[in-house]
Amino acid sequence: MQVSLTHLPPSGQAELARVQEIILEELTQRIQAAGNARAKRYRLLKLVLFGSFAKGTWFEDSRSGRASDIDLLAIVSHEALTEMSAFWEEVEDRLFHDPAIQRDVSIIVHTLQDVNRQLKDGQYFFSEIISQGILLYEDAEPDRNGNPKNILARPAAPDRQRTHDMASAFHSNWKQTSMAFLEIGREYSVRPTPVNKIAAFQLHQAAESAYRMFLLTVTLYAPGTHHLGKLRNLARTIDERLEEAWGPPQKPYKRYFELLRRAYVEARYSPAYETTREILTWQADRIEKLITLADALCAERLERLKAEAGPSA
Image (cartoon, rainbow, N blue to C red; front, top):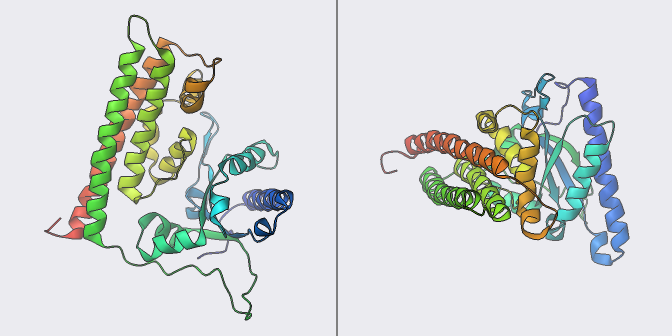
């Protein structure tokens, strides 16, 4: 894996150093607060930069306000660390509000055991991160014999036929799911007495399913989160064309998307959550376009996989 950040300007390198500092600081504090022997063994083993900042394809558009996010893979020592979703959200929130960090930071968290299993299986998403990513941090503690530990497996070549079959099944299942949720969301939003909260939740599920269709078909990976912003960012990292679904990132559309993002929890449980038929219509129209775009990109991927797998695919 690469370790150099010389392709980034000094400001970008300083920004990443601050990101790393905050992550390690927050994790240390959480471990100390836990105060038990098991938690003391928890470690951040590796922090890997991937996506546009690793590839050198990041962008900033001052007119639209859009900019590439910083995408990170945190490889941790224990499964319990991957289950601390609230903790990692707090870390991302602190990163968002730190004045030295000028862009959003998205973190996916996996154990070393899980990453190595995926690499040995030829999983595309993790194999690309390891081949194109940049190692920002590594726990260099040796094993009891003084030898290096926490070693990443060598990525295996994928089984082309199996990859095609899995991707095809993901595409079929999640396309059907996303369209069903969209249909239900539209139906609830236009009833004579609209049930707006139910419609909002169903539309969230439609958008989430569309992103899962794209991610699982194209990479065979989707993070275990319902956070629509994170799914959108990861999908955008893989193919920027999906962003066309949401139109210009301006008022009031940014707020409309934020309402959709919040609907997974708040539309079900918060009496303060409010939306309108106008907003729901905009969301449904955007999601319909998202499904269409994602479906077309999935078809591109499946055609390539079919050609790689050969005549039997």
